[in-house]
Length: 189
Image 1 (cartoon, rainbow, N blue to C red):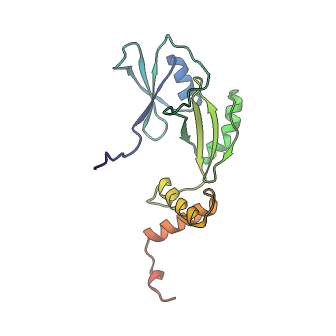
Image 2 (cartoon, rainbow, N blue to C red):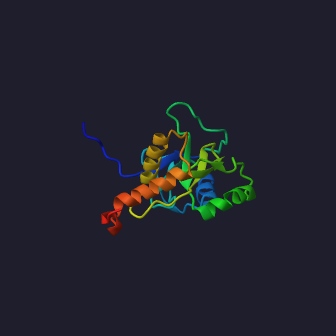
Image 3 (cartoon, rainbow, N blue to C red):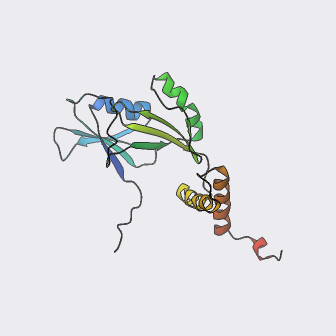
């Protein structure tokens, strides 16, 4: 059977409370410009707000002025969204704890994920948000996913529990060797 080949996330739409809560959080806290608004074409009682998370794709929020924020944690039942993660540069990530503290936003503190660092906190509606920052840059012509796939193979081959910096470094070296020729490759050893 043929696949319906995905080429990336187009957008993610969340059910929000009122318009001001959405703008204050998505633009005010996370710095995502509010770029577009129109009615929810499937529900005339709602507005549809569009925010740019930094890569030109979109986070959209359905709002209704009659809904008020409920900060209770959103469902984590089967089929529910557990969390949404956003990429931060290392420079911004290093400031995240301080900036969340300045706003009085409770958070997890920095969590070591081996290949990235993460901080978790809830939005005003109880959705778990992750701020994530990779600990590596992929070599030219490759993506973070390319490096993680190769690092995973190396980790499994070595019997290691999780991806660590040495797996990333070895994965990057492998990808570069595969994608770039060298005159030294032709010389006898």
